[in-house]
Image (cartoon, rainbow, N blue to C red; front, side, top):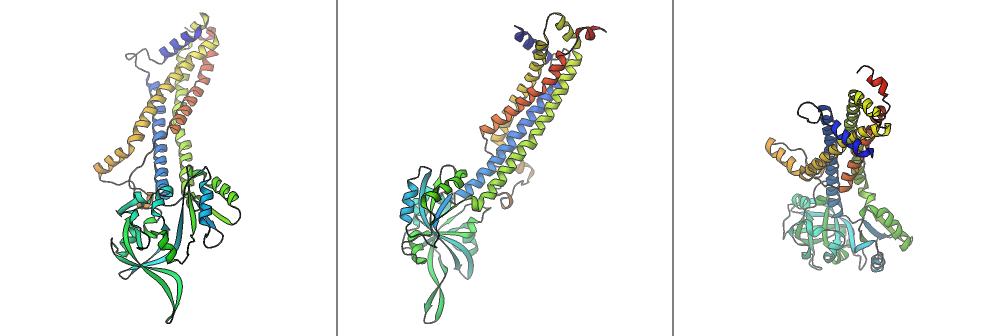
Amino acid sequence: MFRPVAMFIGLRYTRAKRRNHFISFISLMSMFGIALGILVLITVLSVMNGFDQEIKKRVFSMVPPISVASLMDTLSNWKEVQSDLDKMPVITGTTPYINGQVMITNSGLVQPAMLTGILPEDDGKVSHLSDKMIQGELKDLVAGRFGVILGEELATRLNAVLGDKITVIVPQATLSPAGVIPRFKRFTVTGVFRAGSGFGFDLGIAFINLSDAQRLFQLNNAVTAVYANIKDVYAAPKVSEQIAKNLGPSARVMNWTQQFGEYFHAVSLEKKMMFFILLLIIAVAVFNLVCTLVMVVNEKEADIAILRTLGATPQMVMMIFVVQGAIIGIVGTMLGVVGGIALALNVTTVVNWIEYVFHVQFLSSSVYFVNYMPSQLEWSDVWRIAACALGLSLLATIYPAWRASRTEPVEALRYE
C-alpha cells in the first residue's frame, strides 16, 4: 500500500522545486560522477582486453598451446603419440614438427635462427602461419624442393628475397678427407611471413617442409615432438597434466605457460588492479550521493514530520530516500554503461583521430606490441561493473534513509 506512495515522493524529491524543476545540482553531479566512473572503467578494461587479445594472437598464431616430446632427443613413435592425442576430446588438432638451431647465410650475411619443419597441409590444425604470409604461400613448401619461409625481419637482415638461394648451416659435424666440417644445405626462399613485433618471431624463426627437415637433421622418420591444440588455451597446464598421465613417464609434455605465461599473467594482473583502482572513482561518486541524501534529509525534516503525523511508518520514510538514491544510481549507471560501451567500441577510431589531428603517436609497436589502441568489449565486464555501481549506490542510501526514519515529528516541528 505504501510502496507507490514512497516511490512517488522519492521521485518528487529527486527534482528541485526551483529553477524550472530540473534535477538539483548536487544530485546531477552525483549522477554524472557515477556515470563517469563506469565509462572510464568499461573503456580501460576493454583496452586491457584488446592488449590481451593482441598478445594472444601473436603467440598462438606461432606457438601451439601444448607440445609432446620424448625424454630422448627425438620422437620415433610420433604417429602413435599423435593417434593417442587425437582420441582425447579436449584436443582439437595435432601435427608433428621438427626444431633445430641453425645458422643462415646469404651474400656474406649470417643470422642464427630456429629452423622448424612442418607439414603445410596441417597448418590450420595448430597454428595460423598461412594468415601471416606477406609473400609467397605456405603450400610452396613442397617436400624435396628444399624451400624455406623466412620471417620478415630475418629476410631483411639477410637481404634475401623470393627466389634467392640461402645456405643453412647445421651444427652437426661431417667427417671428410679434409677433416671435420659443418654440414650445410642450400635452400630457396619461397615465402616471407610477418607475425608482428614483441616476441622475436619475425627474426628468429624459419620454416621448411617436415620431410626436408628430416633429411637435413638426419632423423630418418623421427620428429622432435607433436604439437597439440585445445579449445581453451588457458586450460593448457591442466590438459598437459592429463596428457602426461595418459602417455606415461616416457613422454615430456610442455605447454605455452612455461615460455610465455608471464606475459598473460602480467596483463591479467594489471586488469584486476585497474578494476579495483578505477572502482574508487565510482566510490567517490557514491560518497557524494551519501552527502546529497543527508542534505536532503536535513532539508525535508518538516516534510518527514508531517508524513509521520499523517500515519507514515518509519519503513515508508526510509523507502522514500532509498528510492531517491536508487533513481540517481540507476540513471547514472545507465548513462555510464551506454557511454562506456560507445567509447569502448570506438576508442581505436578516437585515438587514431587524435593522433592524426595533433600529429602524435601514443603507442609504439616496439614497446607495446602494437602501434594502435586495441579494444575488445566483454559483456561480462559490463555486467560486473554495472552490478558493482548499483550495489554501491543502494548501499549509500542506507544511512541517510535510516536517519530520515529516525526523525521525531515533535522535534522537527518545534520551530516551524
